Length: 180
Image (cartoon, rainbow, N blue to C red; front, side, top):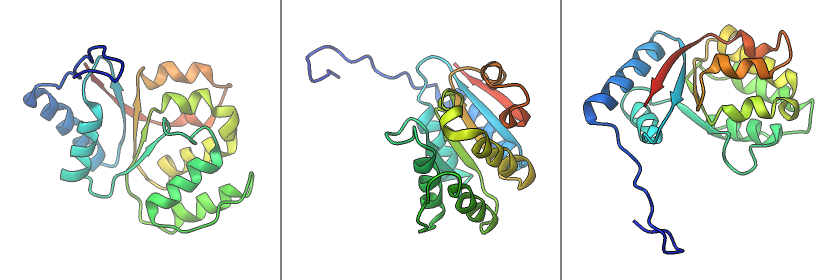
C-alpha cells in the first residue's frame, strides 16, 4: 500500500490467529467475570480488530469510546458521546451540570462494558476532564459494576504517577493484558 504522497505504507502486523485468539479469550474471560482490563498495546498489532471481534462475538453490548477522536479533548464531548452510545438523546449542559446527565445515563441503564480507547489521553487531560468526572468513572466501574476495557500504550500503573495524590483513577482495579 502507498500513501498519497507516494511513500510506501508499512502494513499493519496482524497477530497470528492463534495468538489473537489467546488475547481475545483472556479479555473475554476477565470481562465475563465483571472485571476491568487494561489492554496494553505494544508494537503494531491490530488491536482495533481484536476489540471489534470481542464486541461482535462475546460482548455485544460493549460500548466503545475513543478518546483519540476529534472533540474528545473536552469533557462535554466525552459525556455527549457516552450518552449517544447508550442511546440517550440528552442535551449536555456545561460543567459542572454535565455530570448529572452522565450519572443519570449510568443509573438508568443496565451495567455493560465500556472500552476506553487511547486511555493514555485520559491522564493527559485529567485537568480538562476534572477530578469530578474521573471520580464518576471510578464510581461507574467500581460501585456500579460497569467493567472497563482500558486500551493504552503503557501499563495503567505507569500512568497513575502523573496524577495528583489520591486521584480517583488510582482506585481502578484492572487486569493487565499485554499485546505484542
